[in-house]
Length: 149
Length: 91
Length: 157
Figure 1 (cartoon, rainbow over the protein chains, first blue to last red):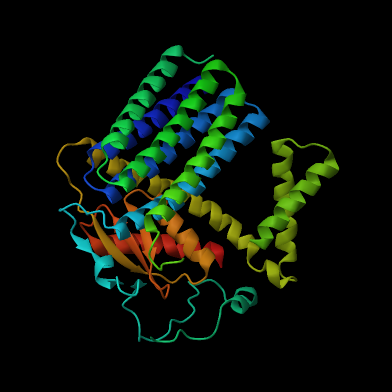
Figure 2: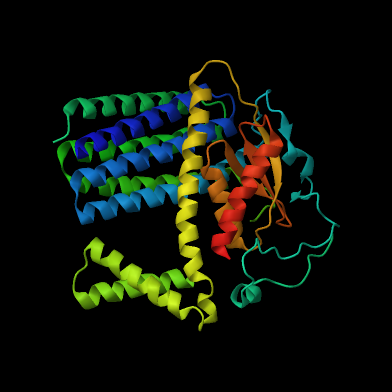
């Protein structure tokens, strides 16, 4: 029984990594390639590491497999963000099928400021999302309003 | 023990993935493309190490996967700093 | 966050006192510690709302796993079939998260969902720029992202 689960995890994980590699070859520009590579790659490695933990059934090995999974899950989005931003600002061209680019309009290459388009509007209120207002979180939020530029 | 056929299919898929990402690494038109391919290569090698650990039953191979995951992340950060160098963006 | 560390500490203390460091015993200690902290949270302001946050965290994990699978299938389909169905683009998402930690968590979770990739935060930290792969319906995408943000902030606050 456990052998079947293990085999499924391994095959699915490897298939996800193959998918990431096909995506990195086929997709047309840098951000879309990163969509394919980072997420499918991280998920594939995580599945294979779960298979490793299942295969050994040992606390030390499971701890190491869990450590690898958490490293990869924690670092993959950060690396993707850093490379994506660097690539965008270095000027890697986007695919011609790109329908919208909100970043280009609000980026000022002279001052390197990135406008939100919300300057001059009312300062935002602290939003509580239906959670009961608790004194612990209230103290943490800064009360002073944002200055309009 | 696990079916050798499953292990072989996994190896096959992972090595072809490695090959494809090497193609992108070699021909990628810009440097960020190559960095993305390098990141993917490290992830795939970590997966191969895991498969090999299952195959041979030696758990010590997993340490290599840990080191690989960490160094690949550091390399990506370093490359990004290198790419953005020169502007006054200091964040 | 503080409450979680206390809970892990209590679980460690339980494992040390009972002299058994197996995973199951640690889990039992964690459950006991959770019960103790849930009783204590009315007295200590720093623990406020901790007992509600833990079940929300597990619900969020389930929700996130579901989103991850669904969106991964969507991307996989588009990668494997020859014509492109995707309409990539960069959109601006006004965010309600304020502190550094909240914005980091939000950006990471958005990056981990296939189909969206957070690129940058505006200088006044009120808008997150996101590269999306499927911009066929921008309003729907923004609604989904706001749902993720609402759930993350429920846990963090």
